[in-house]
Length: 113
Length: 112
Figure (cartoon, rainbow over the protein chains, first blue to last red):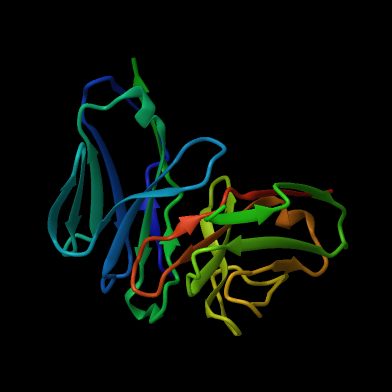
């Protein structure tokens, strides 16, 4: 059973701080990794994708991938109350040959004003 | 309007009834997906489709049927609803050359 694990939280950070969200996956051959943000009662929206080891930055968001350790993380700099949401990690497993994404259960982030 | 829509947005039904959830996208995306989201389980793939008339099972397909006669529509049918199928159902689509999935607004289904 291929798995994607996330701490459910809530992760509480003060406004302006860096929020660090982590995700581990079991399929060592996975190639594509994604972070989705989901506000309460809304649908998920993609905020970052990463395919290679290292960091990928987009505005206040940085995704980090370490395939050897099988983890992917998301850093949110200068956290704002509007960042309060559930963040879902998703992985496209290597052997699917398709797009059978596996999602983690999500980490709830609370940014305190 | 362009985008991906789902109907109905809310549905209450009884055990044993057949229910069909509709999904429609206007982007001509080749791929479409159905997920269910439950507390403690996150998003789980039920079925996906790579093109019209091409469908494949996901992680939790039992009790569900899909069809895709037209590229823009991907209905999900619960042939005989059970209480365990109470969930929020999301449809998503993506183009063949990209990884970004675009999600519909979801359908909250309650099976009594």
